[in-house]
Image (cartoon, rainbow, N blue to C red; front, side, top):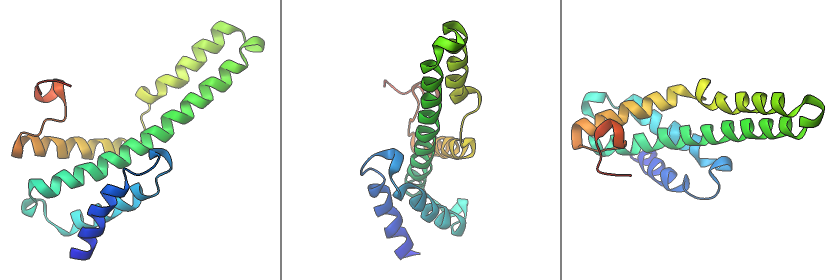
Length: 140
């Protein structure tokens, strides 16, 4: 498990290199952290492990969200480029509907929920505040 652990930590560092959208390290790093997570019972984990696990899930969610929302934006812009034959108001309404899918039909909700669960655990164990409204952090 030690070799997997060191590769997983270095993977988190690699997640920060280059454009997030095309970074091939993110999914592999998450897989390493998930492997260690499955081998280590939750009762035996500490906040240090959970901090890194949180980052792996958050990085994967952020990448998936970026790719998804960029596609939504591209689709909306393509639709707006055809506004003349469609009519401006219907094109704008449809483009807004496409963009609003980021909220109404979010991508990879399972990754987000796992990251939120880990954030709650970290708040309970060490007072880690990942959200101003939820945990009453002092500022953005």
